[in-house]
Length: 423
Ligand SMILES: Cc1cc2nc3c(=O)[nH]c(=O)nc-3n(C[C@H](O)[C@H](O)[C@H](O)COP(=O)(O)OP(=O)(O)OC[C@H]3O[C@@H](n4cnc5c(N)ncnc54)[C@H](O)[C@@H]3O)c2cc1C
Image (cartoon, rainbow, N blue to C red; front, side):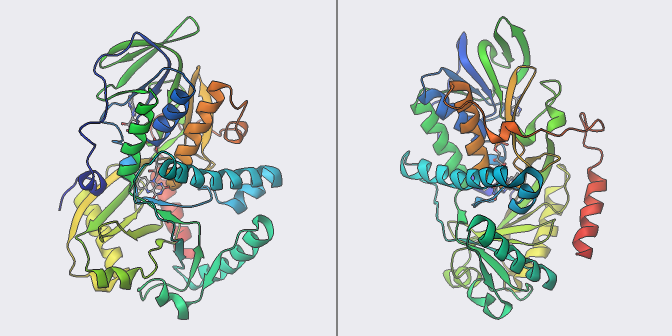
C-alpha cells in the first residue's frame, strides 16, 4: 500500500509546468500558497495586468488541492439553513448564490480555459446513516424548494439500489448539481492557466518572514527576498505562525483517504449505477466515489487529528468501506494518504486582512468550488473590480483559547462522536 496521494500518483505535476528559479525584485502581489485559492487569485490578478508571484513551500498543488476527494456541488460547509438563520434572508440568498456561482467557476475553467480534469456533473447522493436522518431529508427537501427554489430528490430505501449498491443505508437525497473531478488535474491545469496570463510560479519557496516596508512588504523566502505591494496568505489548512493573528482564524483538520485497485466495469456500475458522488449523513461523515479509472475512493475525518498513522487510518477506513460495500472485501487498497483542510469556528469561509496581509480560507470539506471562488473574489477586491465581498462582510469569529495549537480538538471529537451516536 502506497502512502502517496492517489491523485498525485495518477497525474503527477507536469514536468513542463513553467516555474521560475530567480525571484523578481518586486511584484504587485505576492501570494503565499500554490493551491486552488492562491492560483485562482493569481489567474484573476494576472489577467488584470498585475505582476504576481505565487510562492509555494513544496511543489505547486502540494496541499489539499491535489489530495481531496474531487467531490463538489452547491452549498457551503455551514449549510444553507444555518446560514439563513444566522445571517438573515438577504445574506442567506447571497451565500447560496455564491455557492452556485462557485460551481459555475469550475465550469468556466473547464470550458473556457480548457482545463481537462474529468469534470462530470452527474449529481450527488447523500445517504441516510440512520432512519431519523431520512426523515430529516424530507424537511430539507421542503425547505430547499420553498426558500431556495432548489429541487432535491428523495430516494426511499426501496429505490436506493438504483443509486447505490449498499445494504447499510436508509434512503438518500439526490442533488443534481453535484459533480466530480480529478483534483490534481484541476490544480496543475489552473497553474498553467495562471502562468499563461503572466503569474510567476515558485516552488520550494517557503515564505519565512514578512517585513513592513513603505506601503508594502519585504517578503523573505527560502529563495531570497522580494518586495510586494500586497500579500495574500492562501495557506488554508497549512497556515502557520507567519503572520501574528492569522493562525487563530483557521483550525487545521486532518482528512484521510484510501483508494482501491481498479474495479471491474461491472462492479463499478453495481456500486454507482449513475456515476454519483456520495457521502453519508453523519457529522463524522464518509465521502466516497468511483474515480476516473474505476477505483473506489473512500475518505473521512474519523479523527480530526492531522497526525494519524496512515496504515492505521487505512485499516479504519477499509473497515468502514467494506461495511458499506461487502462486495469489496477482497479488493486490495492501493493508496492511503492524508491532507489538511481549514475549518473556522463558524464553519464559514472568510476573506479578511490581518496586519496588512489579505487572506481567504476556512472552506471545511467544501473547498473545491469555494477556494477557487474566494481566491477570485479576493483578487477582484485588490484589482478594484469589486468593493467588497459577502465573505469579507461577515465577522470572523476567533476565541481567546485558540492561538497556536488546537488543543481542544480531542474534546470536539468526543462531542461530535456523541452527537453522531445520539441523533
Ligand atoms: C483529504 C481531503 C479531502 C477533501 N475532499 C474534498 C472534497 O471532496 N470536496 C471539496 O470541496 N473539498 C475537499 N477538501 C477540501 C479542499 O481540498 C480544500 O479546501 C482546498 O483544496 C483548499 O485549497 P487552498 O488552496 O486554500 O489550500 P491548499 O491546497 O491546502 O494550499 C495551501 C498551500 O500553502 C502552502 N504553504 C503553507 N505555508 C506556506 C509558506 N509559509 N510558504 C509557502 N507556501 C506555504 C502549502 O504547502 C499548501 O500547498 C478536502 C481536503 C482534504 C485534505
